Length: 398
DNA sequence: GCTAGGGTTACTT
DNA sequence: AAGTAACCCTAGC
Image 1: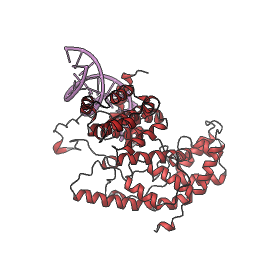
Image 2 (image 1 turned 60 degrees about the horizontal axis):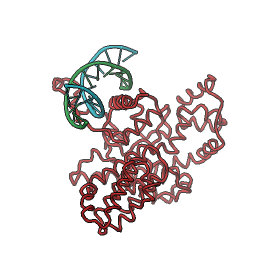
Image 3 (image 1 turned 90 degrees about the horizontal axis):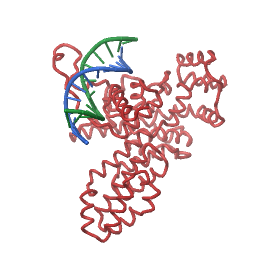
Image 4 (image 1 turned 135 degrees about the vertical axis):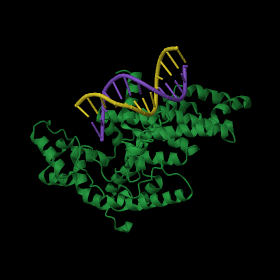
């Protein structure tokens, strides 16, 4: 279908971009193509804005513009990532000072004491000290050489930026569509349905499916649900969603397959070059899609996933149950001892994702936490999540 | 199939 | 050696 024939209003465009850009599993070349193809969005949502910064930073992690991206991220308070942002800022600034042509000039800019005191670096306790060291080294080549041995390491700086990006993705939160999905079909559904008129309810029923609609009606009739606490904004949003649902259904059918085709093409090129795609966010099991129809926008369950949220670019480890190592179903290899996975330290991003997942789903809902944010966890099982939570609890007993 | 809890291993202090 | 984090095993639901 031609892009010009999409029936996509700018307000829907904004919702759509909010959803897609904020999904770290959708590769940036696909989001760029989509951005070029959809109508200019009516507004920029915070999630969309943040995701764009993250994608820019990921493509260019060690530069002056990367530094501004980190500052932008740090300028919006996001408690879980403040320390990661400060450390990334410090590492990139130091790296730029150490590798630039003019140490003194660069230090003057990137280690401005005002930035250190109140801005991005405030969350990091060692920052003031480091800034002091760099400023003291101005005009003193020997001191610069000492600093260089510690801060001139490109891969260490890149790692800090990667950690920040990972933590930011983990903390980015659900899209507006996912939130609406939760309100219409998830745990919050009864309140939303109570506030809705008959016509709206019948639309909701189409979205969540008959089975879930019956469950929700049963909950409504059981008097177990408190009276509606819907705000005017809430109702306004739902009505807006109602108007745009048809447009959205039309729209979601269009760009994703094209993007996926791009992704598959890129994967083919990578494979031809001998690059192993297993960890790439855009790899997917090639046979699964043809035989499985696209799920409805709102699948009728408490954990509701729209097709947008459904990860078309998921790696095989996300879409298939893959044995970790040597786990054989039966028979010939059963006697072989299963190789132990190499211990991989949990990243800050994974920790944050676990904490927010537990907040969302509760302790003990490990599978739910894992599936609720699959891209945040890298090759972790529900048991891994449970073990990590146990460790965290030991570290800081409730 | 999922989870809780005890056990094991590898690494750090 | 002791402590810790990551991973494994398995009973019980």
